[in-house]
Length: 58
Image (cartoon, rainbow, N blue to C red; front, side, top):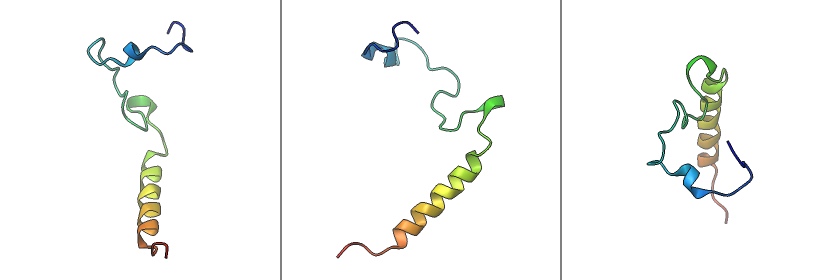
């Protein structure tokens, strides 16, 4: 990528170029998928469930 520190909104224009494979997967995909993806997802659900059970302020 040329000039990586320059702000150019057209870089994210979806019509200008197609997104690469697995571009929007938070843990990657294919042969380079994150080994901890399943653990991280389960951990996130447990944290959110724990926070949801706590009473609100006041």
